[in-house]
Amino acid sequence: MSGHKLFFGLITHRGSRFNDAGQAALAVSDLAARLEQEGVEITFLVSDRDDYSPDTFPITRRLLFSSAISQAWIEFRWRRYLATGRGDFVSSLPRDSLVLPLMACSRLHSYLGWNLFRPAIRMPGAEPVVRLLNIDLSHLRVYKEALDSGCESIVVIEDDARALDPETVSLTLLDLIRRNTCGEASFINLSESISKEALGVVGILGDSDPDQPSVTTCSRPVTNTVCANLFNREFVLELFRDMMNRGLTPVIPIDWRVNRFIMRAWKMGFLNGHTCTWVEPGVFIQGSMHATD
Image (cartoon, rainbow, N blue to C red; front, side, top):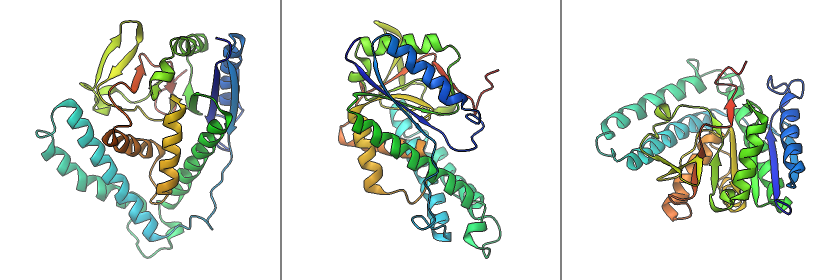
């Protein structure tokens, strides 16, 4: 294992209940130490800054409106992308077409509220948009540091990722590194967040790899949130470029920025059916969605 470089990036923020006593940073640091003992060279970054500036991203009604509509549209496009992968593109179209305006109305209400005459900064979507921009900026910081580090394998973890068994996590990562799975795959989902049924990926996730029983292949790239993923350098580089070129407005959650990039990369041929795998069961669980006590 000597000579392999692995970057660990932890996404958190001041006041996070998942890292209020430094517990998330300590857990990832402990995991990094376990891997270092096995000869893996670790570069570690905790991104806990709130870099949002109202001078750079002023909150306006137009921003809130466009962000709500953009998120609903991307969610609709993702549903169609998944439907194509499942083979029910035509049969699911009426349902998805009905869901689109409902999602748009729901997003608009959650961002603008009922009183359209109040200042934009006091509208219900202002605080969530600022939070999402801080998360975006933190991810971009981690991506840039990861690329600058020269590491070929990059683990990005959000602070609500919980390793139920740190030893299992370290052994799984070591096995992925040893087999170069993280070099051959653009990204590997490591977390248990949303169920496969709720995600709509049943029929897209395939069988487990005979050589790696814990690794499940996908007929097309699909994600299970950005809670905990292992990326290769090329994927992070292209994702970073995509986010920088598109800009951060309209504002959408980072999960959907990644999904939007995946759809584009799939269409361009950068990603294919061999570039995404899942570790099942996930070695992390998303604490904001599941109780871990």
